[in-house]
Picture (tube, rainbow over the protein chains, first blue to last red):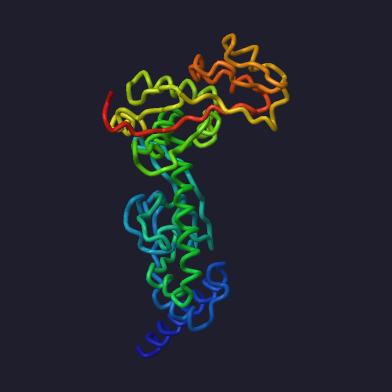
Length: 236
Length: 69
C-alpha cells in the first residue's frame, strides 16, 4: 500500500517537473524564474479532447491561455451562415487564446481538436499576476492584444463579407453626426478601397448599389448615411 | 460646393483630366490642372479616375444624417 502511494507521489512529482520544463520551453515563460514557474505550474489545468471536440466558442468568456501539450487544435472564426475561416493551426508547444487574456474581452475565435489532443490552460489571473509588477508592460501588452483582436475582425470581414457589406460597415463605423466631433472623416474612393480590401471601381459601384437601397445618399462630396439601421443590416 | 483637389507638386500638366472631364470644368492653367468652372462640377470623380499620377483627389465626407431630408 505504501509502495503504491509512493509511486503515485513520484509520478505526480515527475509530472510537475516535466510541466515546469515544458512551460520553460514556451517563449512566453522562458524568462520566468523558478518561483514564478512553480506558481504557474500550481495553477495550470490539463484537459484532453477527442477529435472534433470543441474547446471553446467565440464570444464565450476567456478561461485563460491555452498551450497544446499534444495533438493539433484549429482556431477559427465562423460566419452566421456556417462558413469557417481558420486563423491558426496549433501544434505541440503553441499557445493560443492570448488576446482575451490580456485585453479582458471574450474569446475572439473558436477552437476545436483536429485529432485527440491535450492542452494546458493557464488561468487569466495567473498570467496577469506575472506582469503585475510592471504596469508599463501590462499596458503595452493590452494594446497589442486589442490590435490583434481588431486584426481578427479584419480577417473575418475579408473572408465572410461582400464588398458592399464591408463598405456598409465601414461607412457606419466612420460616419459622424452633423455638428458632431470633428474632423469629419474624408476619404477618396481609393482610400475606401484600401480599407475594405477592394479596388476603386468596385467601391464606386458598391456606393451606387448602397445609394439605390436608400441607406445612403451621395450629394457632391458628401456621403450621407440616411438610414443607419438599413446600413447596419447590410453590413452584417 | 466642394471641388476636386489638385496636388500641384504631383501634377505634370499631361492634360488627361482635361480630356476626360466634361468640357470647361477642368483646364490647364500655367501647365497645371485647375478646376476652371467649379460651379459646373458635379463631383463625378472622373478626373480622379483618369489622373494616372494620383494628382487629383476627390475625398468624400461621411456624415450621419440626423434628419431624413
